[in-house]
Amino acid sequence: MALMITDECINCDVCEPECPNDAISQGEEIYVIASDLCTECVGHHEVSQCVEVCPVDCIVLNPDIVETEAQLREKYLALGNP
Image (cartoon, rainbow, N blue to C red; front, side, top):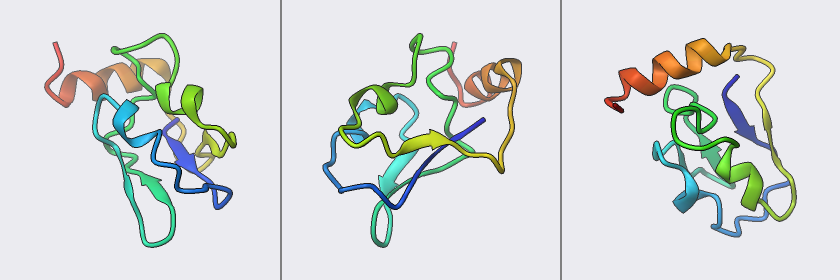
C-alpha cells in the first residue's frame, strides 16, 4: 500500500527530506504523499522513514491503494532505482 498523511499533520517538515523517492510534498493545507512515487521505502530501507520520524503518527497506510511488497519493489525499480 502507498502511505498517506492524515489531517492530523502539523506541518513540521520532518517527513519530506526523509523520503528517498521525493514522494512527499507540501499540499494546500498539509503535506501529501504521491502514491505513484511511494514505495513505503521498499528497496531503500527496512521501514518507512517518514513514519519513523513523524512526531504525531499521522502517516498511515492508504486503504484505497493496496499494493503487495512485490508491487512496491516493481515500482521501486520502475522509478529508476538499481
